Image (cartoon, rainbow, N blue to C red):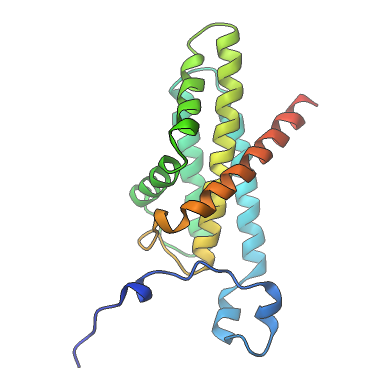
Length: 192
């Protein structure tokens, strides 16, 4: 028997995570119940929170370029940790491409603020202060959003190879906005 090619629908994971109540009902597919692991999801959210805090902290690095390299490293480490948690092979190359596609999709305004914030760090005094605040806020929001998108992606059976940034663009933007609030909370906590 000749193997058949997978259809586009079969290649693309289902991004919907069923509500907890439906997972325990008798009408739900028991295979999906086995795939959904509440403890794993909580651990993934904990990873996102931890790496969001790290990203916020590295945004405070006063040296331009070093801040961006550090933040990118934190985000890649977060995705590597999540890959391990979900027993998915990790590829730095696919992770970088996925992150670039997502971040590029939030619009030039947000990216511009991050770049300007990093460049402001070249200006002694107020420029450094403004740059540090700007970069730490944007990096935390971005890290949070990337993490939330990949929780959803991995929970729905996706891998780095099946990741389609266009399918999750709207969800990413929603989580980026949530991430801005998370970053504001981190900023407020750091003042105390």
